[in-house]
Structures are given as structure tokens and as C-alpha cells.
Image (cartoon, rainbow, N blue to C red; front, side):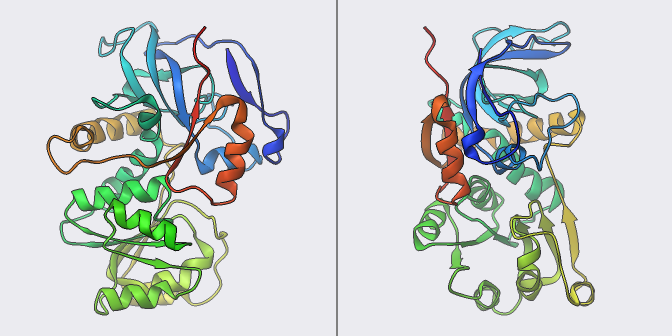
Length: 334
């Protein structure tokens, strides 16, 4: 099968496509024929040598995919059959023509949705769902500040906050991205490039601040995050795009607000946790992608690249040019 490879850590130019051995499903695993896979920041970090796959996971890039069940390993419980159209959360291996995945990580492709759209759901939406419900314990009426509001996770989080009957507020780096976030349902959005988002958030919340912050930036935002965190607020860090170092009296200021810090990574979670997350998302969010019941959730797809143009897809994401997800399409079967 064809798969994305790189021989040494570095830039997008190190990526290439070559033939590798097709995997075989193990105990309780499904063989997925991949039609499309989406790109994530974790793929960029892994390519740079900064985010190795968990022990036992494929070293091929790709944390989510959509396609067709092509085979079943021993011990599968009968929930899936060959030919089913599915999307999957992966620990790696999605940017290839085939990947094996535990059957509990699979979800049905919503009716009327293409593989391109479905590939944009698993990693981003499960991350957002996990942060809001498993970690943040979001409640009706709460306010949530979402950094990188036009990203895959950001656009998913906006819609899930709305579904929870809470209030999504975002930051983004351009008016075009803020407009996209607004179309996803953001109640307010602020351009971190030219305004102090903490002051704007405090003004929007009438000085109260936000109950939850979804933070993929980290160090460079600590002071502004604390400025606009409410008393008893939850600050959830799931990425460090702005670095990991913090200098100053942040602990004292956090303590004064009785605030709490949570950190979360999805890829390194154990199998049982991921299966529980997939089940909760499938039951509580997935029905809304089909439009019944309302409101309708939808993934935001920025662009689609053929597998052979994987390096260009990485360049686009590295330049922060995408709004929503970048999807990689597999070659058509002969």
C-alpha cells in the first residue's frame, strides 16, 4: 500500500509517499480502507521529531481517517461488517491506503456525508468534546473562551458549546478567521494580532470573565488568560503553540481567583478511555451531524490535497493559513 513517510525529522520537504507493507488486523481490530485522512498539528510535531507515536502505534502520520471496513481481526464483537462506511480515531497510520484500528474507535459516517467531510471529524471533534465534557464539565449558560477559533478543534468546540447551551467566545488572527468562527456560532470574536483579547472578553462578560478557557497556545497567553478567567474558572491547556515557559506571579493570581488548571492530551490516553469517549460522542453528538434533531453540526473543511501533495498540505498548516480542516485524499482504487 502507499503511505506517507519521512526518513529523518525536519521540514515538509522531508515527506514523500512510498509503498509499505499493508497491515493486518490483530485481536479486536478492524482493517480500514482509507478514503480520506485529515491533517493535525500533531502530524507536524511528529514530522519534526517532537511528538513520537505512543508505544505500539504506527509510525505513519495520521490521527483520523474515513473509509470502508475491509477486514475484521479475530475477537471482533460483531458491531461492524466488511463494507461499512466508517470514520475512526487513530493513534497513527491514517495517511496511508489502509490502517488497522480497534473496533471501539470506529464511528459510522453520518448519512449524506462524504468521506472528505467525515475525515475532518474524529480527532478534532473528539478532542473538543473531551475538553468540554470530560475535562471542563461544561454547564448550561457558562461562557467558554476558545483560542484558535477557526481551527478544526476551534470550529468544533464552538458548535459543541452551542449544543451544550453555553456561550462560545473566540480568538483568531485575522478578520477572515473571525468571520468563519462567527458562522460556526461564536457569540464574539477578537483578533489577538491587534487587540488585547482579555480586555475585550472582560467587556463582553461585563467584568465577570469566562468559566472555561480552551488553550492550545500556552506560555505566551498566560497573563491574558488569567486576566479574563472568572472566579472558580477552569483553564484547560491542550497545546503549547506559544511555548511552555511561564514567568511571573501566575500561581498567586490563579489562587486569588480559585482557578484551576487542567492539561489534556488525547493521543496518549489508554484504549478504555478512548472507547468511552467515542461511545459518549457517538451517543450525544453524532446524531446532530445528520440534521435531526436540530441544530445541525458540521465539520469545516478548508482544503483537500491528494496524498502525493502531502508536503504542500503541511506547509499550509505550518503557515496558519487554513480555516478548519485540511484533508488528504487517497488515490482512487484501480
